[in-house]
Every structure is written in structure tokens, then in C-alpha cells.
Image (cartoon, rainbow, N blue to C red; front, side, top):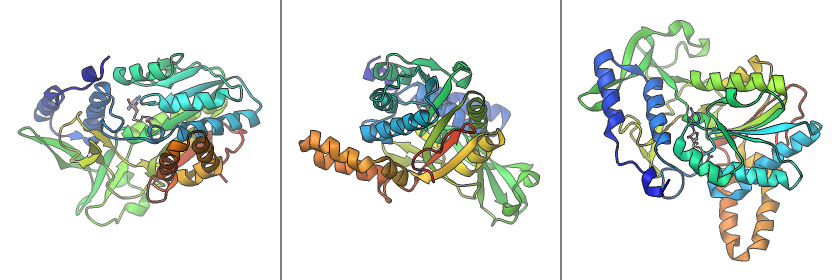
Amino acid sequence: MSEEALVTAADPALAERLARAITLAGPVPLSQFMGAANAHYYATRDPLGARGDFTTAPEISQMFGELVGLALTDLWHRAGQPDARYVEYGPGRGTLAADALRAMATVGLTPPVHLIETSPALRERQAAAVPRAEWCIDLVGVPEDGALLVVANEFFDALPIRQLVRTPQGWRERLVACQDTLFVPVIGNTLFDPVIPQQFADAPVGSILETSPASVAVMRALARRLVAQGGAALVIDYGYRGPAVGDTLQAVRAHRFANPFEAPGEQDLTAHVDFGTLAEAAASEGATVHGPVEQGAFLTTLGIAPRAEALARAAPERAGAIAAERDRLVGAEAMGRLFKVLCVAAPGWPVPEGFV
Ligand code: SAH
């Protein structure tokens, strides 16, 4: 597909469909709005890179995917080199997979590749980067034999969240209503107090508590398969160790923040990932959980500094750019602290490097 064919002009169809549905049936949970918006958004374009809406770590530098690949290879080695499959959730342009698999191959690991991707536009990009890959829409499509070496970078942040708001009457859900053609957040009538964790019962009025049932479901399914088949997953994303109160819903378009309730399906809607809740979901299925640790510390332990020096020696004219890319990945004010890495592993699998 050509670059042009991937770019949709502001497509009124989704906004109109959503507006009609909400007008007929009433306000919908934020998760429904976000799920419909992102499904359309990713299905119709390649959103990555300078000309797109946002840039991710693997698109900044090959060092990211290489080090992730080497971390998984090291684990696989120490686990006794079982038959294994490479699995990646939401692989974007396939850059991370290509870099990780190249690094794995240098030490003789060439696993079958399973890419979990719903977007036809992005599957096409991934096929160019990793021609031997197979695709599926969720983990059910990955065979049930062999250990799983799994990566999810900036995947969970794109899954739909629900938001609960503390009102003077108690906790209620934030819904999305439609006024004329404008989408606006409103507060539902149902009281959620019975399901609110005790520590938030008396949070100040206006506090927002986010949950992502979709993320928890994906994590539980992943943990079950790791426990059954062996293997480990590295989940990398911006996030916090929750549950915690805070409104992290954001929209990004052309590298700028935008109003999340505008132009559904035409901008990237994300929320910060609650690693505490994901870790708990994985542990509840019997998986072993390490971290989360900060991305900066993780990449530093894996050797990003010597890797950057080696790349700079091989391409002296790019030395400045390579150092800048390294700093962007590990710098405390850049991605190094906000981004975290969670490892979920089968019981008995070794502890990955970078996790104490
Ligand atoms: N991991 C890539 C891309 C991140 S963007 C990188 O780091 O560059 C999010 C990715 O998740 C895209 O590939 C998007 O199409 C995919 N995605 C979003 N929601 C999904 C879902 N519900 N199921 C499968 N893939 C999804």
C-alpha cells in the first residue's frame, strides 16, 4: 500500500456512527469510545515517525530492539535453550522485532515469529520488516508448544480504560456523551463505591481512578500461557505502580497533545499503564513477576553505553546522533524514568538482567 493510501482524510464516518449511537442509546463508558477510536485509528494508518503522530523507542534507535532481543536471548540461554517462539504484541512498523531478531540470530537463536496485530496497514509494514513472521489477532493464534519469548512495547497504553470519578455523592463512572456533533465527558448515575479499593474511599472530590479491564484480560491470558509453556515477557511502557488516582488519558496528534474527546479515530488515545495492577493480574495466574524497573536503568545494565560506542566507532559521522539517541532512551528527563519495564515469567525461569 502506498504512503498516500494509508492517510485517510479526517474520516467523518466513525465520528458520525459514534454520535448516532450515543444519541440513540445514551452516553457510553470511556472504554467503548476509546476502543472504537483506536481500532479505527490504527487500522487506517501508520501513525509512527516524524511525519506521523508519535515516535517510539525502537524508532529512535536500533539499540533498543537489539538490547531487548539480547535480554530475551540471555534468559533463554540460562533457561536451558528450550524450543521457543518470538511473540510481539502491537509491533508497529516491525522495527523492534527486526532489531531483536537480528541480535538473537547473532547467538544462534532463530525462533518462529508471531506478531499480534489487528491493523491491516501496520501488518503490511511489519511484513516488510520481518518477512518470515506469522500474524494473529491475539495470543489464541499462537501455538501452544514451545517457550514464549514475548515483547510488548507501547502496546498496553493503547488499550481502552474506564475512569471513575469521585463526586460529592461517591464514585461514579466518567461517560462520553454527544452534544450536537461534539463529544463531551459526563458523569454517570451508577455508584461504584462497593468496588473501589479501601484506600481511595475518601479521595478528594474530582479524583479520577482508572481501570483497564482489557489490559488485565490480556495480561491474564499471557501469564496463563507463560505458566503452561515456559518463557518470559518484557512489557515496556510509560506508567506507574498503581492503583493510584490521576487522570492520564491523553490524545496525541502530529507530536502534540490534543483534546481526547475530539476527532475520534484521527488521533492516538492512550493512558499511562498501571504496572501494579498488571503485575497482580500476572501473579494471580501463577506467573513470576519482576519489576517494574525504569527503562533507563534497564538499558544501562544491558550495556547501552558500550553498544552506542561501538556503533559510533563504526559510523563516526553519526557519533553525535547516536549519543543523542542513547540519551533520549535513558535520560531521566527523556524516556528513562517515565518508561518502565515489567518482566512476567514462567515459574522457575531465571531473573532477567536489569532486574534485581
Ligand atoms: N510497539 C510499536 C508500536 C506501538 S503503537 C513500537 O514500539 O513502535 C501500538 C501498536 O499496537 C500498533 O501496532 C497497533 O496497531 C497495535 N494495537 C493497538 N490495539 C491493539 C489491539 N487491541 N490488538 C492488537 N494490536 C493492537
